Each structure stands twice: as C-alpha cells, then as structure tokens.
Amino acid sequence: ARAALDELLGYDPLPPLAEAEERRKVIEAVREAVQANSARSSYVFTIAATTRDPDKSALLANTLARLYGEDQVRQKVQATEAAATWLSARVSELSTELEDRQGQIDRLRSESGLVSEESVAALSTAAIQLQNELETARAALVRIEQRIEAVENSSDPAAVAAAAEDGQLEAAAAALEAGDPAAQVRFDRRLAQVRLQLQAERERAARLVEDLGRRAQDLSSQFEAQSADLLSLQQLARETEATRVLYETFLTRLRETTVQE
Image (tube, rainbow, N blue to C red; front, side):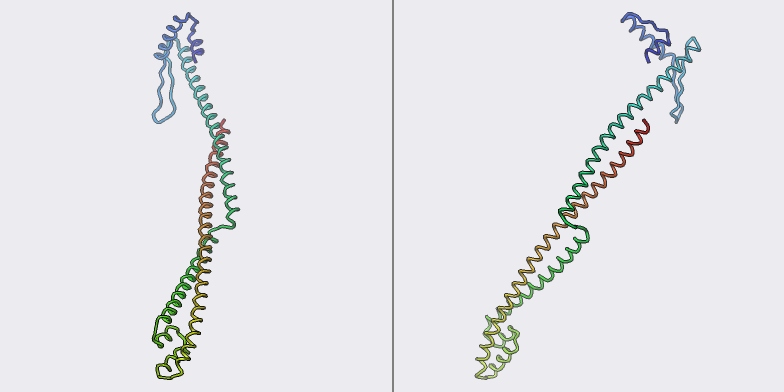
C-alpha cells in the first residue's frame, strides 16, 4: 500500500530522517484528503478524495478502494486457510475417536454376549420368579421346623398329633385319651415314624432353600452384570452417535470451506 501511494503521490526516496518526516506529512495529507462514509443498515460504503487535481483525487480514491478490497480478500483467504487447517485436524481427530468408540462397542458386545434390553428384561423376570419360589420354600421350611418343635416339646398326645398333622397319630391319641390300654404302643410307634418323616421333610426343604438361594444368587449376578454391560453399551452408543454427528458436521463444513477456497 505504501509503494502504491508513493507512486501515486510522486514521492521520491529521501534520507532516513527526512524520509520519515516526509512520510508523516504524506500520511497526514492523505488522511485529510480522504473521507469514507457508510450507508445506514448496509455494508456499502463510499470513499472520496479531495485534492487540487481531479484526476489525482479519483486515482487516490480508487487506489484506496482497490487496496482495501485486496486486503479484505487476503484476510478472508487467510481466515479460510486457517479454518480449513483447523477443520482438517478436528475431522481427523474425530475420525480416530469414532473408530475407537466403535471398537469399544464391538469389544463390549463380544465380551458380554447377546446382551440386549430384551435379555436383561427376561433375566429380571426370571430372577423375580425365582425369588418368589425361594420365599415360598423358606416359609415351608419354617412351618416344618415349627411342627417339629411342637412335636418334640409337647407332652399332650392330642397336641402332638395336631402338630404332626398325621391322621394315624391323631387316631392313636384319641384312643389313648379314651383309655385304650393298647393305644400307647400304637401312638409311640407312629410318633417315631412321624418324627423320621418330619426330619426327612426338613432336610428336603432345607436343600430346596439352599438350591433356590444359590440359583437366585447366580441369576441376580447375571442380571447385574448384563445390566451394567447394557448401560455401558447404551452410554457408548450415545457418545458414539454424538461423535458421529460432530464428525459429519465438521466434515461438511470442511468441504464447504475447501470449495470456497
């Protein structure tokens, strides 16, 4: 711009100090000679120059307009190049990040098997059902232990028979209460059999409770593991989708910027 103005104003090289002073005077003269006005609510503006020579005034105004236009173009090109460089680097980073996230999803799916919302829901239903069975089995074990305790701790034959819930023992107890001398032997013999039966029932009930408890624990562990895997997959999927949208947005902008260049 300075060389163009020097040529326009017929400026000849001078010694350094004189040149600096002359340059300052030229700048002041140009400032006083040039006026720029912009139209309201518009990007349009006008440049006017006033000198003693109409041709020089026109040349000065046109030269400044041309220099301004060239400077604007240069700045836009520089900004576009900087934007293209930044976008290119960001697109590359997002592409790598997108591949990494997709790899994490593939690895998690491979490690967790066919985990899905449906499979997790099915495990939840099965776990609830098994837990209900376990509670029922525990209640049955408690009832058997209560019957055994009543049978062992009661001295009343009728109460023992009622706790044992055995018809033959109840009949022997009734005969014993009626004064049948042979009823005691029948009662004792049947009571021994009932005790063995109750002990066997308690062992079966205890084994069932233990088995159901172990299965319920295993199923609960599977449910928790698959639920955690599913949550991780869903979170990774959301993050991957967000990265993909950002990548595609920047890629589109990069293409637009490249076309503009």
